[in-house]
Amino acid sequence: MSKHIIHWIGGKPVATAGAAPRRGEIFDPATGQVAGHVDFAGTAEVDQAVAAAASAFTDWRTASVARRTTALFAFRELLNARRDELAAIIVSEHGKVHSDALGEIARGLEVVEYACGIPQLIKGGFTEQASTGIDVYSIRQPLGPVAIISPFNFPAMVPMWFFAIAIAAGNTVVVKPSEKDPSAVNFLAELWKEAGLPDGVFNVVHGDKVAVDRLLEHPDVKSVSFVGSTPIARYVYETGTRYGKRVQALGGAKNHMLVLPDADLDLAADAAVNAGFGAAGERCMAVSVLVAVDPIGDELVDKIKQRIATLKVGPGCNGDSEMGPLVTGQHRDKVTSYVESGIADGAELAVDGRKHPVTAEDANGTPTADGFWLGPTLFDHVKPGMSVYNDEIFGPILSVVRVASYEEGVALINANPYGNGTALFTNDGGAARRFQFEVEVGMVGINVPIPVPVAYYSFGGWKASLFGDAHAYGPDGVHFFTRGKAVTQRWLDPSHGGINLGFPTNS
Ligand code: NAD
Image 1: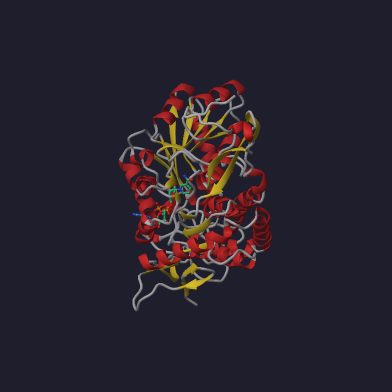
Image 2 (image 1 turned 45 degrees about the vertical axis):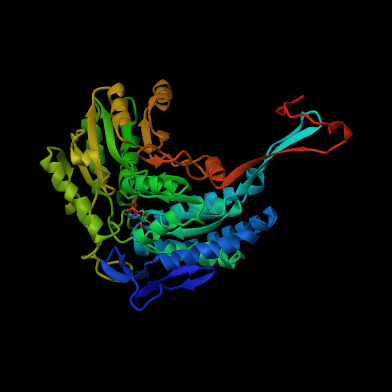
């Protein structure tokens, strides 16, 4: 049966008003069939959601920290119990395999659990007797209604990176999920209601640029947390800040994995395949460039080719699939066009993913011939300047660049406009220490191919991978969703009397 996804405002579902509302198609990427539609919000629906959030803020910011954490703990328990259901929703619209969807939920839950510690995280400082008879203390207060705009590739985890801490800190939220896989956030909205969160604290509007633009300009929206491609991240940052908002906008990536000759090449090949082709390469922390330091290139490429040959590509709902389809037909066609442009630019096509076998049916017996498939693809002898190197492809295409030395490898990484994640594979502690010091990238893995920081650190790239100065979740997240206030206090006695027009100093 075809589904119809609508907004969630003030604790209940709301459709876009009007006789012929704008809508988008939702696909099942494994079969290529249209599975339903999602309403697109106009200005009226965004205004309605922000009004609900603004109205709920009055009570939510006065709710005790204990009351707020009670809702968070309840949400955590519900989500933990129903993670399989949410994973199935993600698989059906995104296409990633079920175990991978469970992984994204687990990493989102980590942030919810971190936010359950808000009583500790939000504590201020206190200085007794800062000046004679005067105490000074600091507190952190919520901002108000905040907007979260998320990409298609982590439909549950990325919203959770932000809303858990925002809500715990006393803000109210309007989420604008990706229109490609909108159902996961509606499922989370229902869990919040069941967890006892007051209506209006968590709202969802679906849609496209129209909804995003209204959130960016709306005077009652106090901050914007965005994750998506670099051009849109830059636009969101520039527009949101022009309207006086606090903005953190996380953008695209081109993550390099540098392998030194002393590394264990079997383990490095495993890591490159896992990080290059997991989620069909649709991860902002995917490894898309493998940098092999001479003389290991031939051996490493051979090992990767052997591993690619065994990968099972098929529907995410089939238990034995290791890699699923791409999210839409349009995206698959764009990614596939890079196979041709890589060849035209002179790179060596070592594995052609267009020829990789795909499981013929999904778990329900539906044929997959029209699914959005591209198998794992490997290019060797790639060089900067080729489009497969320069562009963020966001698909299962791994490029191998050969370099003569560690120095050449680091220079290549540092010259790249993106700086989201990177990894070094080596057994040389000195080289690892030097890499961590020299590399101009926000998240660094030493023998770890996908170095997504745990919830109590913060997630964020450098350069064109992040606009703004606050990374996501962890201490940066708490800071972003609160504003500081410093209070200077004394209790008057007669010694404080008298006229003195001088600037107050400490004594
Ligand atoms: P996208 O930029 O197309 O969309 C992201 C969000 O912006 C969506 O909600 C979308 O509806 C909205 N949007 C799209 N076009 C817009 C426009 N013209 N004006 C205003 N809003 C617009 O990104 P995507 O394809 O959904 O996601 C993939 C991208 O996200 C990749 O570039 C990936 O690297 C990036 N990403 C980055 C991180 C990170 O942490 N840095 C994490 C996940 C994904």
